[in-house]
Image 1 (cartoon, rainbow, N blue to C red):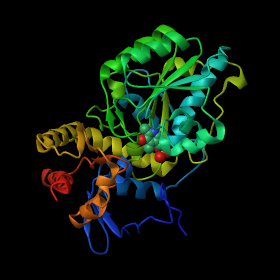
Image 2 (cartoon, rainbow, N blue to C red; image 1 turned 90 degrees about the horizontal axis):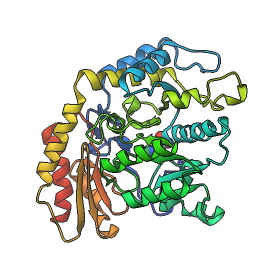
Image 3 (tube, protein in one colour; image 1 turned 90 degrees about the vertical axis):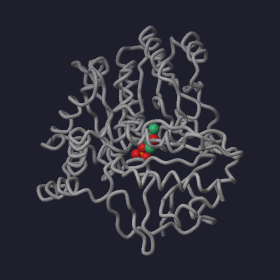
Image 4 (tube, rainbow, N blue to C red; image 1 turned 180 degrees about the vertical axis):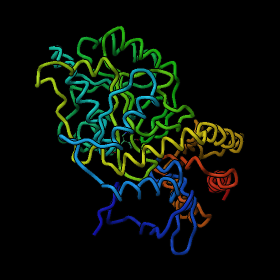
Length: 399
Ligand SMILES: *Cc1c(COP(=O)(O)O)cnc(C)c1O
């Protein structure tokens, strides 16, 4: 049997069985649903996209996978070259892996080893945000601040290697003042904290973080696994503030195949680049640089650029802001909109019980969590479809 994610198997309801999918729609045997979650925020071009399908089929007819240990191939070369042009600044060194969690692990390993290679062995501390989510593996759970993982705290106690701060200036300044000699990196989901509750914060915080990282020689890592490829209304938040290491996942392949990349800037790369074999980056996931994933990612980025996805995202933000303007309800704490993300935060999670079934009947797939009802739609959504999603959200409170 299947053991489903994040679910108490004893009490979970039957999941909806999907038999087909096309564009923004998921099909069950008896219903057609707009996927307002984009399959965990990844399916930015929608399902069954003819060009993405074609790119994968063409590659499958050559080969699906070869390892990167001692071998290389065109799709991975083209993708790393494309990312080099597409990403800002000197973010030019691409280390591929099979999921976002692993890519964050790689970023943390890079940052740690960067300082160990330099002999600065006191720099082991990770600065991270309260409510951070960076993945489900052990180090990412430790760097994250997710209540779901508090059993780890029970088992091991609080980590002496991670410091969590809120997205406010004073605690940021204070953390650097107090710990700068031990700080290794500052790991953040920039502007939008996804799984921690669709929390949005100000760019000024990141600008100041960049200054402090420069001042004290601390590496800045952006986990843009969720925010990358336009979700915040910026192509990448890294376009606005340049990190030393950038992590991308989720939408990288247009949601077709799990793949991720950890991209290092010049300074970080040079920290490994010398005669000493012990200074090499010791990591290598079996499926890194998978040829099908690379073919999908290349096509996905091409669509993103040639079909002006940024204007699609700005349109989604405009429509969403317009439709949600003036919406309020005694049970709603706050409505937040940023780029292709809208979140209705409620006061009590019990208020959202039954919403998924309600949305299903209205032709929308939604998966609220804790106090958060949200939508992160595929960017190809039409205005009418988007309004259907937003009307469904509002209608829940008007019952
Ligand atoms: C989803 C997510 C991850 C983990 O990615 P997986 O592919 O699920 O391992 C890491 N960081 C952020 C910000 C995410 O949203």
